[in-house]
Length: 289
Length: 328
Image (tube, rainbow over the protein chains, first blue to last red):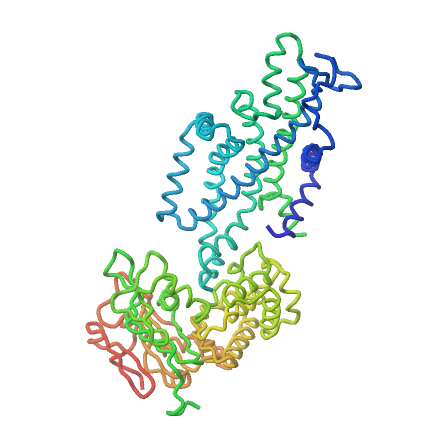
């Protein structure tokens, strides 16, 4: 998308209270994650910082776990884990979905389209968690197993949406004009079609971002997700056992971090959809201004 | 100017061009069009909606809609090279670079999410291999030649911020960008108001004459053809019924259809009480063309044989027509 249009979308998001709130929350989480990567905080999540099962106190704001590790620090470090998974998954599955959807839609009912539709149908037909377990087994615990499984599944929805939109855009006069001036299909798709599907890509990207975080939590909870690191899913898995003995801080901390981020992102996707929808009141007012 | 020693080179020779519906051998929308264009020539192709003039233009670019196909006799030769049956890649090399088309609807023929400058530059980069700086300079030069006062400002604008006339000028600049030898202008002024129509067409023909670019002006308006072309071809029901130098065609139409069309052109200094000419009846359905001459049912001069036999081409000096009962 052009920078001008991008700035316009951002300006409209900020003008909406919920848009501003969700963007703010997202920025705060992003800052936490960046801080962890840069080593400002959270890097000592595995250290035994205090006594076991310490209640919340000025030293340990959310208490400690059964090994005496600081729960807040673990939750903070998990934020970085969540971003490490969600960012590449959202970017790559949106990119693959856009390219595949654009190609399928532009050559719709040709062999490429038939093949891509078959591929999407096949991938969508495999139960998701089964696919991840199979991939994890095939890749022998490779660090990117989870990413790969999520991308393999998440790109199809984006591709289907982009395909439908491409079929619509393909019939517009400016695409004819581009063909008349001798541009090749790849140039037309990349230059004239995909930029016009940016609304879909932004909203889809946001939704995939949340889905990736949620799936990571579920997979880690099941023991086939994050390894050799910390994540909200692992904390919730631990916490689920500990609730039985009356220790609920692990569970609450991870759930709360997860809940707030997912809520904010859902709000953001919702607000984005409103801002980008040309039929929405805001966009119309802006165009006439 | 056109002496026997300086015969201009023939750019395009279309012969027997037939366009049919796919899966329907009976119905032809273009029926054996013969057309020749030499370098720098301005040819007006006039006719009613549905007469096949746009399809004739699209055939020259290999861009017929998927539901249509060329008939077996069709031949389109560009500088002597047969184009019918070319691969898509060869067509693509030709489009824009040898033959450019200015589209019909200026407001929708530009990508809405990209600026005019970016769209022009993209074309110049991919089709002429210019770098960013020379592409920008070239864009400004092109727009300036189209009498745009502030080309630099226009480059940063989005299509929805522009008037129809400005959009059309940008599209003309894009057509000229690759220095084609032939420009097909398909009803380019129909969507514009009358004063803009006149200036845009004037600028286009002027630029074409300056650069020696041939122009195929597709229009339903014989007035436009008179103002800007050397030669005119009149189409009816997928066939060229008369072709002649503009002055001859207007002064002395031979085909009754041409005469009827000319009578329907409003003229400012004519007596207002005299009604404009109209042509009785309707254009026949291409799936059920009458036997003989397609215009016969609407023709005042029609003879008995007009309704049974197809009139062949009568050639007369530098003009030709298809009629058994030509006007004097």
